[in-house]
Image (tube, rainbow, N blue to C red; front, side):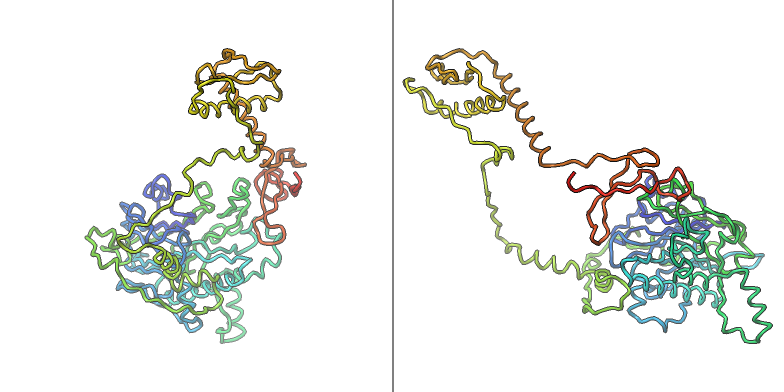
Amino acid sequence: MKLVTWNINGIRTFKSGIKKALDSLDADIICVQETKVTRDLLDERTAIVDGYNSYFSYSRGRSGYSGVATYCRDNATPSAAEEGLTGLLTNHEGAVGCYGDHRDFSSEELQLLDNEGRAVITQHKIMCQDTEQTVTVINVYCPRADPDKPERKQFKLQFYKLLQCRAEALLKGGSHVIILGDVNTSHQQIDHCDPRDMEDFAENPGRKWLNSFLYSSAQEEEEEEHLKESETTNCVQMGKFIDIFRYFHPTRTNAFTCWSTLTGARQTNYGTRIDYIFADHRLAQEQFSGADIMPEVEGSDHCPVWAHLKCSLLPCSKPPPLCTRYLPEFAGKQQKLSRFLVKVDQKSKEALPGSQEEEEKRENMNPFCGDSKKRSSASESTAPKGKKSKTTNTSSKPRGNLLSFFKPKLTDVKPCENTPGLDPFISSHSKPKASATSELRSGMGGTTEHTELVVDAPSQLCTSSAAGETGSAVKAKQPASRLTEGQSDVKKGASSVFWKSVLHGPPPAPCCKVHREPCVLRTVKKDGPNMGKQFFVCGRPQGHASNPEARCNFFMWVDKGK
């Protein structure tokens, strides 16, 4: 039995085809996180893969956000499956059960914790030492604690608490438990690229939770001491799960699973280990035979993590109801119109506890409320039935060139007074070409003594000479095509000069003082007094200060005057 977990940072990571990607991982159970797909965006090619049965959890409040999925080979078909940790999203018979004690959570908190699509649970039958047993696989994508949003820190800790409550309830129910996914917390200093740069590393609440959640070898000694000192050991809370990677590689350094793509930190292996496979300590000690990370697999800012078990899987003959192949849109049955006309209860907007930002609260409690205002305003602005709205053309004339607003007005060329019988139609059509000649003369920076006008009018039309010569009609010496080319060149030159004076390009990049290489331009996007300001930093990828191939500490603000 082989397990793989991978934060894919979007289901579109599988550009070469999802089946090819799943087959390349060569695992019986593949758990992916951050699919960023909702139910309405899930297509059949992603949901139904030949040789696999899949189980999805979606975000109810935000599109393109969060989401997890578990793909099981047909030889690993689960006997039960459900979405979420609370049981509130389960309305079918094939549920896993064992939800634990939720008295420490309000009903609103439980709903919010499951509304972001962060957990899928599958339960499998396994054969261990000629004994049939049950193992429950919990695929999780734990929340990230945004430093700028303190309410998300509390939301993350509540999610950890709910996860532990469910996992321990499953253990009490007689099932083995495996938890795998993106936990979004590096446990020890060995799991972080530069822990010394972080103040109070061990005091992080997420690390404190991991310390209490995970079982360590030191706990056995502590347990024996407490047994000797006192008969009651209820006061000591012992962790029930083991970090499988550290179980096989307790001292390996630079074993990271996540890197920043913005700084190119993967090139220098400047990352963290936040993707885990946890298992109850009995299953870990008796059945697991190996585990490792797969940093060579690219396509995401995370890499996969795998683990092997000695036990064999006993597939169920039929997938549980949560399987995506049973979704109406993929079941191959004709849909009724009534399915698309479901009445939605509009709940009142209530102030919820501080566990999410305000937009997420409104979206999670009432996903359809955000569009109601837009729809109502659109319906008010539409015309009544049977009447066509008239569209008025504000201007039928061409607006002209932007450069025309920055040029002096040109005088028109008048025909000679002594030209008898000149057709006014010809006179009016000769004006644009006369003005073009004047524009060319002014654009070339001087006046020529014999500049003639080339027109299609009869030869009676004449122009005045710049040197004072009067009334002599001469033949055109310059072809019309050459005049047009010269005119276009002048316009292009004037246009480029104008735009260069208006739009300034980026300032020239300086060279960093250590590597003598051109720097890269960055912009401050964080809220504060420096929001929007630009600066130069070393162009190399981020890395440890002791790495000469990594980015140096060069920094320079961009001068506004440049």
